[in-house]
Length: 167
Image (cartoon, rainbow, N blue to C red; front, side):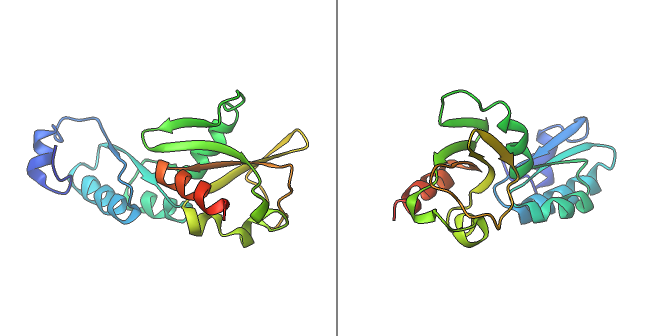
């Protein structure tokens, strides 16, 4: 359709009449900029923006977002709906929640030591161990062999995780 930072594109998208805007690029800095820009154009508009990293949620609110969707919070809410046998659930376009047994390369390491987020851009939002689901697990607890990790990320992040965890 066009560049969201271009006023002509926004006018073609009926920015003057729209009751709300959804800002969901894959880059938090762009989302912050667009949120601030949209807020300056339409102070009365409802703005919903996406945060790829939890640390940017407050920045998006300060930029003017009324609501912020973060991978972690979306994942935590979706965990309860992820009780079937499927290994991957699409939460939103380009955003998946998937589960996998703890890879042998990660057994004994804590989430903080694992490097999962840094290496794959995926976040562990829950761990299922001994039949018990722990949402937002303690990053210092060592991962156990029989645990099931519940992760959230995009398709590329899931692919990276699967390749990386096999090393």
